[in-house]
Length: 79
Image 1 (cartoon, rainbow, N blue to C red):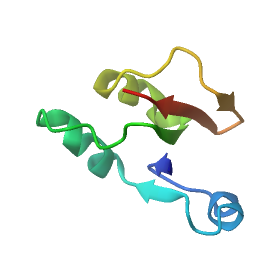
Image 2: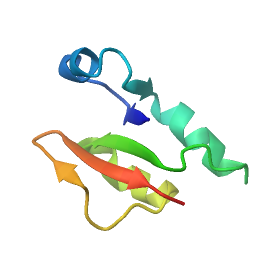
Image 3: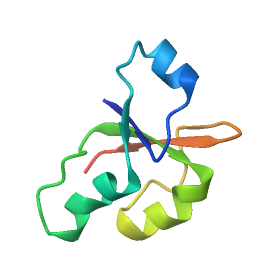
């Protein structure tokens, strides 16, 4: 699956035919604070540049994104 954290652009909704999911920052970080099973294994996440630094304090992201544009970086969570 593809998750957008915080906000999802119109083009993401349109071109994924509604399959790109949107999670708020709170929804995304909740499972990581309670030693629960990681629900986002083998998931692609698109992170807005404003949230990237906060996200790196919560989960381990690869050092390089798979793709970047002016607003988002795309990562794959594989653990």
